[in-house]
Length: 129
Length: 152
Image (cartoon, rainbow over all chains, first blue to last red; front, side):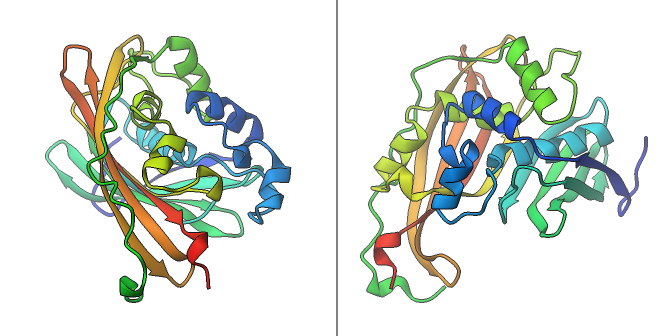
């Protein structure tokens, strides 16, 4: 698939963010922070009424969008900003566009949005194709 | 942000070493489970999910998350928040490959925000290396450490 500057990239959707995946990531990250595992802790801290997705999972969703958009490509650099939490059960959608193309390097801009609360992560990346 | 001059300075954490001592190996089994947990199948060309930039550096750096917070005189129970994360890859991460981490805290800056009140903004840099020393990536992460003890 070829793109031009300004083109939209195919979205990547998680229909329902999984609390079970958060348990797996607590092991991957060696970080058993209970706000990702125990809804009662989230409530006690006044952070909501659902478990909170680990931030790096949200980055992985954005990377997945890029890898799907550029099969065989290589992410060379990426910057992500964390604007709000993603909660268990959220429907999360990554959308993005091509900002620039220089030779075989594509610069992309993207956001991760959740239904009802808008953008929760944003980022830019360069991908070698 | 308002003038933070009326606040005591943030702890002097800049320069704290985050060099790791352990080796991190990306296993095929974990990479597959990780990929599927994010809604994709693992690659078939031997590359690992690039989010291992964050996982490998966090797991194999020289301090735990709680330890990094402690270096900033911050209780991890007070809830550090991710602000931003950047990565520059020199090479793709590979399944079956082993890596070491070097790094350091770059800065800890005290600020006041309308939304969070007083907070310390922590910036640290980590580098992932092959066991022969070849660098494969560098990442800079920014965490926000809310300082509840300065709440009005």
